[in-house]
Amino acid sequence: MRKHPLHPVPAPEPFGLEGRGPCVAWWIHDGDLLLPESNEGIDPPPGGVCGAQVSDGPGMTAWVLFHGLQVITTVPEEVHTYWHTAPDDVPDRVPEGGTDIEAPELEGFSPWRIENSRWLAKFRPRHLEGHSHFVIEFYDHIVEVICEELLFGEGEFDIEEVLAKEPRLGFAHLRHAQSMEKSGRLEAALTSYQNYAACAPHVDHTDYATRCATSIRATLQLRPALGAGGGADSIREAIESIGWEGVCPALWNILRDDNAQAHWRTCAEAFLEAVREGSPIGSEVALVGVLHHRFDPTGKQRDELVWEVTRRLFQLNEDFDYDPFKDREVAKQIRQLRRESEA
Image 1 (cartoon, rainbow, N blue to C red):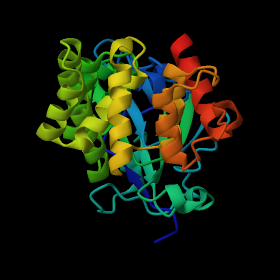
Image 2: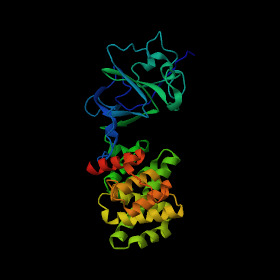
Image 3: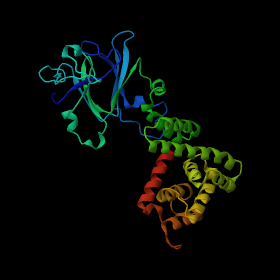
């Protein structure tokens, strides 16, 4: 057995047919893996290639995604050496089942997984656990990738259709949830967080999505109560119902919501009470920043509620002349919140 056995990867037609491989109709980019309206308040993805839509005539359409992609190189067919199938260079070739087969049976077979890849070995391994080196032959290009696996499908790629059957693309739910949350569409965010929790690849991802969903439920519960004049009593009832850990993120959501001005002070008072009791409130710097952004945007008005929270969190003397814009981390938070409000 030589150093680099090839493993043909099972794929639908028109992959794996004899000849030079299927024609690329268009490249699939990272933005194509997102649901509509997934860039609200979030930088769009860089636009990198992460797959291909192919066609070899009527009824012969399919797609491939380079799932978990880390490295990609694309070479025109006319200059590629076809090192992976050249008789003099290629070792014994083994199908996915592991049984040796003769070279003539593999003519035109694509894609390939390269075992013991020297190319893969050249990269730092820290983020490459579970990754493999694949070679995909297209009509005009040879693509080599280092990724977790190749995902295939028939027909034309559409993330909304594919996502219903392919949980490995569940990041689309998370991205959509975060986008909807930033745009204040909490019901849609809640649904997407729940969808992501149902298909998240790791327990910590599931826990994160569940916490976010709990926070949004609390927000949706609090807003009507606050709007009906429930005030602090509504918050206390919510704490009794779901606990401070569930209510705290909801208060954050309301403070960050530009359209919830009527409830900001009630939420700030709840945070002050939590600070007095030593309850966890998240980032102290972020809280001081959002409170100054809402009630003391110039740093000169000295809102007493904001000052009391700031003084207790930062352990300042009562006569200390605090200027949030001279506190680099707090000033950074305020500037970021201003940009988000103006966007």
